[in-house]
Image 1 (cartoon, rainbow, N blue to C red):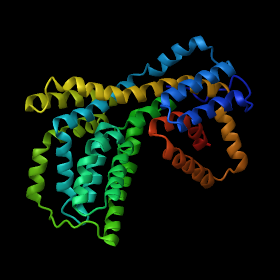
Image 2: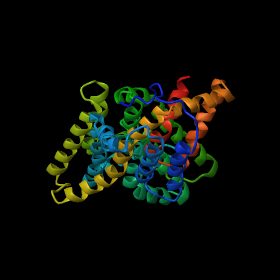
Image 3: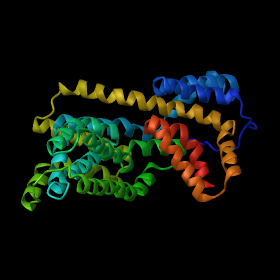
Image 4: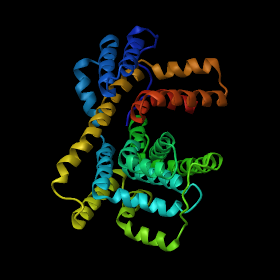
Length: 364
């Protein structure tokens, strides 16, 4: 969508006209100012000092940043997660995960990782997975013998795989920022995401063997598993619609999200687990999350245009390559930057701020 890497309009010389606004964004974030507010102030300051984009065109640029069909999928996926929680289908997903992994060694921990990852994958948001299943799963884990801190870490790590396994809001934003098809990203990310999910489950098994946290004695039963899957058949309909529709080419990610949320609402209304009175609170909850993500994405376009016109990404690449051209060292640098940034910012702000620098560097 965005052409971040066009030929620069001017030769870049690093100074306070560029460094100051970028530093201002970082300082505001450190003081807890919301990401979209910090970025908005920084963008206005950069446009004012550099004059690469007239300020009176900022509104038009913001509109262009939001004028993308793929962005409609973001609120729809978030609403999907809210409806799953409201109808109780999220509990069915967790029950299926427990029936699948609960009868094996470290089963409760593994089923928690599987359930949180599964829910986060469907809703497209790791935060949604933590919020929806966190309290319930942590209580179950502590009753099974896990320390509360370890249980919380297990839920968080399982939910974070929702960013990696499609459909994911992060991939939609990456596609918009870097001009890559979201469907292409979804297909490319399935195997790495599943591998990481399995790796977390294996790590939990190894930790349990060493520390002996879990005291569960439940056994796997194919009859119980089949019964649980049948009881949760409507919950399994959601990933079938989203993943099956996208990978078969029947739906785009946006269309799949729309069909999924309409299907869940219909199921909830017919089963009586969802009423018209639930809609205002449910829609407001989804709107609050969208009110953080979408303004950040909108502000990414004027920021990207300013950085591209000033050739800041090219300058960054030149500086890195002047230090080393070794592929392994550059890869370690990229990983280090992502780890540090990930400790202080969430996925969407990281993508918006860092992707224009690291993506062209990774292509060198």
